[in-house]
Every structure is written in C-alpha cells, then in structure tokens.
Length: 469
Image (cartoon, rainbow, N blue to C red; front, side, top):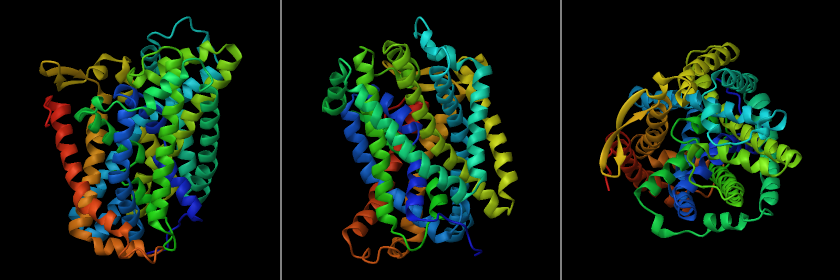
C-alpha cells in the first residue's frame, strides 16, 4: 500500500479523535436528553452504556482502520471483501447525512454566538417561542450554516496534520477552559444547587426502556461511533502507539465534556425555575433568557462564551464528519483533496437545506411524512419533518446498526485474533491481559446482542409505535 499521511503524534491523534467524539451531542443534546429522561438516572445509564458498548467499539474501529490504513469502505474491503465493503459505504453515507443536519444545528450555534455577543438577542422582551421563530428564519440560517461549512472545509482541506490535528490541538483545550469557567460562574447562582441535585442524585424509579434507548443513542451520537469516523482517524494512527489507552482517554474526555455540560446547563436552568425537559430547544430557547437575566454586560459575555463553546464543540465534529467521505474519495478514486473537499462541502450543504426548512420554514419539509409513534393509548400516526426522518434513519438507527455490523465483522470475519495482533502493536502485554478478555467479550457477545435489540426495538418504536419490551 502507498505511504499514507498520519498524525504527527499520539497527542495529535487523541486530540482529533476526542474532538470527533466531543461535539453538539455532548453540549446541545446530552443536557436536554438528561433533562427529559430523569436527570441522574439517565446519567447513570449513559455512563454504563459508554463503558460496556462505546469503549470496546472505539478500540475496534481504531484497530480496523489502522490495520487497513484506509477509509471505512477500503478497510472493510481489504479485511473482509466486497460484501463487507458495503458496510463501510453505509458508514460513509451515514456520515454525509448526519453532517447535512449537524451543520444546520452548528449554524444555529454560530448565529446565537454572533447575536448574543455582538447583536441584540438579549434585548428581546420574551424568549417564549424564540427557538421556533429563529429556526424558521431561513435567510439568516443559510448564511450562518454556509459560513460554518466553509470553515469546516477550510480545515479539512489543509490535510491531516496541518488542518485536522492543528485545529484539534487548539480547539480542545479552549473548549475545556470555557466550559470550566462557565460552570464556576453558574454554580454561584441562586437555585443552582437544585439543578445539581436533579443531575447527580439518580431516581432509579425513572429508569425504563425509553431511558435505556435514549442513553444508548446518546452514547453512539456523542462518540461518533458506527459511521467510520474513528476507522478513518485510526488509519492515520501510528503503529507504535497504544490503541487501548488512547481509546480510553478519548472515552474519558468525551464523557467528561458531556458530564460537565450537564453540570453547567441544568443548574443554569434550575436557577431560573425553568423546565429541564424542554427538549432540543433547551439550549436555544431557555438559556438566552438565563443570560438576559444576568444583566446587559455579564449576560453578553457569559452568553457569548457559552455559544462560542457550542461552536467549538460543533467544529471539531463537523471536521471529522467531512473527513470520512473525503478520505473515501481520495483513497478509492485517487482524486485530489482540494476539489474533493469543496465539492463534498457544497453537496452536503445542499442536502442539508430540507433539514433547514424542517422547523417551520416550509410546510412541505416540516410535515414531510407520517408514521407511527408510541402514544398514551397505543400507536398513533404523527407528522414527521424531514429532519426527524433523517435523524431516525441515519442517527438513531444507522449508528447502532453500524456498531452492530462492526462487532459482527470482527467476531465472525476478521476474528479477534487479528484484532489482538493489531492492538499488540503498541501494547506488548495485551495478549492474555484482562483488557483483551474484556474487549473480546464485549465485541463478540455483549455488543452485538445489545445493539441488535437496540436496532430492532428502535425500528419498532420509532416507525410502528410498538415497544418491544
């Protein structure tokens, strides 16, 4: 195989892989999922899911990518043949479709940063209905989403070391500094400790099947699993470095950011007597009111920093999402990186336009399709937006399905012996260790079983309103 550019150091890989994992899933989605699913109970299940499912699959993805030295399609093709290559191609497609709506949400974050720090957002008399009003304003959303995609493309175009690695080394420490600073301030507010209690003291009576599904989906979404992002990054990882400890650090960083985001946002919400289960609009509707209550100067600074934090987290993930299809076309088609990045960024931006219209911007995409959801009296037919459908197919189902197929691939085709051989490079004492036994058990037994049930249950629940358990 031809020589392949890679990360300049293990730290560079960890920063990039952690950046891929850390994103809007941690800071935008995790707090509202936690608020909607019982607080501490959801946090407890999320941590378990990350340990027993997320960490072993991170190890598996990195190992597959490093062994094959290729993109997801090329990795599955080289190690498993053309039929398995379709799994890699599905991962590439998931990455494209998820980035198409992820960039829209990233645009919301960028727009809120600009209007909070430099505009008049905090001068609004009321934030009731703000999220719906903002999301349905297509003109401004077009501009901020286009700007965000342009910045993402610029970084990816610069390559692995000068672009992805350099940006990740800068952005990840910056993210932690802002996050920790905001937490310190937030915990000083009256009523904040009620949010801490809600968040850290689990009420196990609130744990049900929906809680488990939500926690599992959150783990996959936030860790960037199942779509080949870490296979791609693994292909740039040095053979001399330890996969297991690197994967463990990536997992800890990702979980830490999610945990800290909850420790920031839920106390802020409780300090203002707001509803923690406000859903996706929690960050964009509830928090501007919180920042407004801090006063014109403090609110502008704290609110601006918070939405800048969202932008930084989003950027580290959009970069990895774009790199997946870029690596596929550069590896398999031998096309030049520059034109590929520009073409894909433009295409994905256009694919994301229907999502942009899904939040009241146009009735056709807002009420795109109907299918069954679970209702109080059984399955009921509900309207679904274009965004709902893309999220359900490629995120809620596609990511766990990708993880399930990866575990089946390692267990039945590539074999755990080859996995162990690859991990031993950089971890001499791996074979026979507790780590090997744990990872092999998880990947060959627990992961495929749990993920199969998750995929099947999600399909039944999301599209037919039927609870499997």
